[in-house]
Length: 230
Image 1 (cartoon, rainbow, N blue to C red):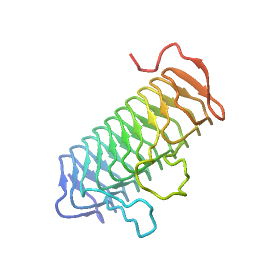
Image 2: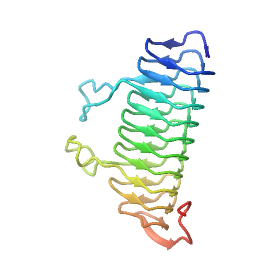
Image 3: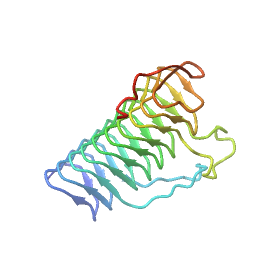
């Protein structure tokens, strides 16, 4: 284990073998770092969410974080409390993972990606830079999401406050692919192996194995097979 100068490791942190913690990292109490993890300068692990009286949704969380073996946590990434990250996952520079989220194994959370509260990301998922994942969202295994993709979980656009029940983000089926700059609206299901074209605005469910494009997105054709759906 190597802890560099100016790193802050609070009491009751568990650190495995061969862990490298670079300068100016902050790790709060209740965090578990498993073997062979590297955490780059300025990362903050175990941030407590603070509503500050301004948020419609009161934050709920438990004070723990579990970082799986052989993960890499990029510079200035922020991982809130109540988050698990599976083994072999890369969390890119400046990424943010909010409370109650679960990240699978061998996935990539790209640079400046935002993973909002209570979002589930499967194994071998690729989230490219600057993508924004809404709260209460599910991404199944083997999904590819390109850069600058936006998602939403509130059809009222925040005008009705927050009561929890209608705030449902999209559900992205196994092996789906989402093109650059696409936008996916609340509660939409992207089917297994479906492909969403670049810049599409997806307002309704996409069938398994379909290619959709346009504004609003429409089915252009059915693919020969769903990606990784066998």
